View 1 (cartoon, rainbow, N blue to C red):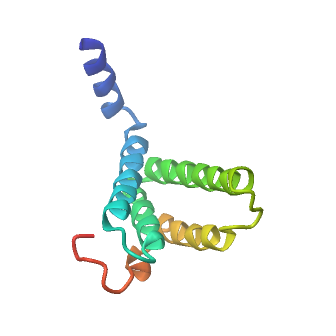
View 2: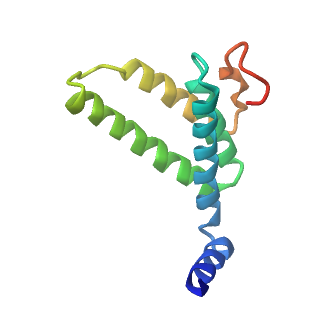
Length: 121
């Protein structure tokens, strides 16, 4: 118990905390996307998660870029080797990448918000 508490406080007070919190921003956006289950909302939630992480500073941007790049690579591998489709989803991945970059740059994610998405999100 003491070890976990010590580890938690060292993380919170360290310079890596914005990276940790930036990761949480991306996770929350992903969770909201799953909960909303709303057509054409992936780009909005990608932009929102990256925008919120960017607000945390350099650590948040770093975490967002690492996670976004990892997700893109993992999805590409799944598409190619599991689903057997070389280019399947490449347009969607490119579209999502643009939304992520929009969020990284600090621009508001509402540009990608689909009409009719509940206000909760």
